[in-house]
Length: 170
Ligand SMILES: [Zn+2]
Image 1 (cartoon, rainbow, N blue to C red):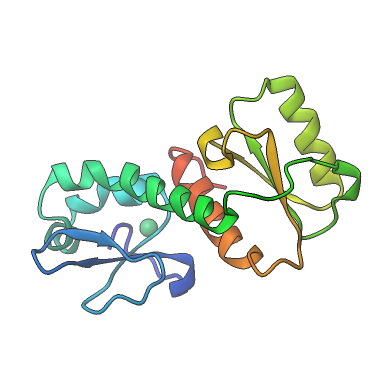
Image 2 (image 1 turned 90 degrees about the horizontal axis):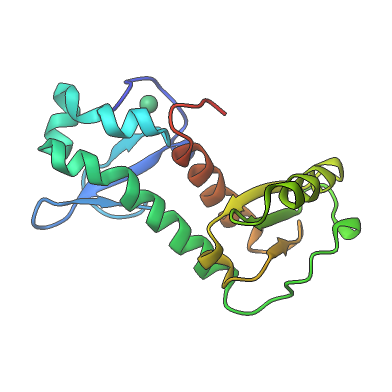
């Protein structure tokens, strides 16, 4: 709906209108009704109301303005839910391997955060900075590559990362 380019469905965010015509983010892409698809990019979401199809979808600029923050919030909520409250919060960087995910608090001092993510990436892990609340205020969390949580987690985190970086193509 935004840039009018074509992508596989799984790489896009799906939205539907609910019974009262309000825009709803359909994270699992399973809600009934006509779906509107947008790239997980700030510009695509915030400019969608400017074209004809986007106008039909969003109705007004105010709805468009609220779209990015509300999708970011949903994505983080899902990450938090998938993580669950408990779990091992000790980060053993030397145990990380290809396909693991490392979540780091975005308010961690930059020097520590940089060296931590660098050594994790060297070992082949995917690293994401997330707001501290998502991690229940612990320093970081590791999701192992063979966890059943890995694929929904990765999907939400990639959407979050792309959408939260304004205009920057990742
Ligand atoms: Zn787009």
